[in-house]
Structure formats: C-alpha cells, structure tokens
Length: 186
Image (cartoon, rainbow, N blue to C red; front, side, top):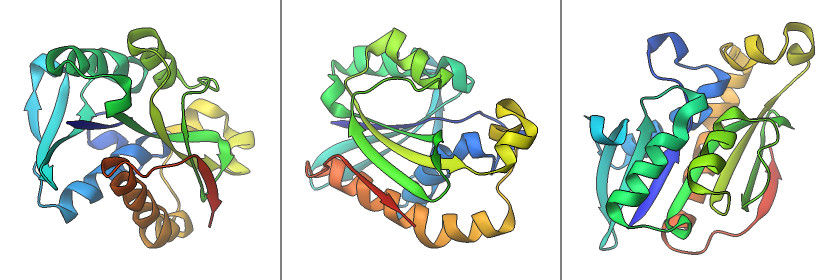
C-alpha cells in the first residue's frame, strides 16, 4: 500500500492558492484515475482509494489546516501499519522558484509549518514532491499573504500545462518504485 498525501488548507476560500499546490496535483491525479474523495473523520482527511497494478493507493487531503497535517499522516500510518517508505508528500515550497519541481527523500522543513508538523508526528524520512511557488510578489506582500494568495493567470497556465503533468508523472514513479531525487525547472 502507498499513501500520497498532499498539503493544503480545506475549504473553498483556499482553492487555487499557492499553499494548496499539493491539493491541485492530487485532485488532478484523482480525476485522471476516476477516484472520488470521501471524508474519513478518523483520519482527519478526505481520502480516495484506488488500485494500480494490484497495489492499493490512498490519496489523502488532510482536513486539518496546513500546519497540522502530521495528525492525519500519523493516524493513517498507524492504522495501516505503514512505514515512511510508503508515504509521498506533495507540497508547495517558497524556497524554490515558481515552475521548479524537486523530489527528494528526507530533508529539513525549510520553514514550512506543514513539514514541521509532519516531522513532529511521523519523522522526516519520506519522499517529497516540492512545487516551487516563489516569485517577486512574495517580497512585496510577505510570506503569509503570499502563500494564501491565488496563482495569477500566467502561473495557472504553467500549472495546467507543465507542473501538474510533471507532478503526476512523479507520483506514478513513486507508485512503481522508480522515483529518484532530482530537480527540474519549467
């Protein structure tokens, strides 16, 4: 079994915000695989289940806010008796330029409160897909307003044409065990 957990904030208010880049990816992957999310309160998450090549895959969107996603990850790992090798986290990263995607296993939280929560609840040795969101606007409005701000129209085009397909390709590599650390830019 594999768990693909996306970081984001629940609710319409946060749709298409930079902090919900992970939710955008996992929603697209679920749509392409005809998977439907259902609320699972015991996991503090909306979860879609699918089967790929005989393996059960859980797509997870925590219903906690971004800063408390570790609660959901811990509940799922404990219930299914999984290890961090079975976990892929997809999240935005303001330390990376917009259009850059980086994969790695482990690492520091780089100031991300979502990663801090995960590290506190489950540890840090899991795979990441980091989606770069940084641009000059961040220096003008500050980090909180920036990550809670919506992608502009040019960013939306790049998200749809490149970032989402590349991220989905990386999810597929994680599922089939061929994911490797790398960095790629649009």
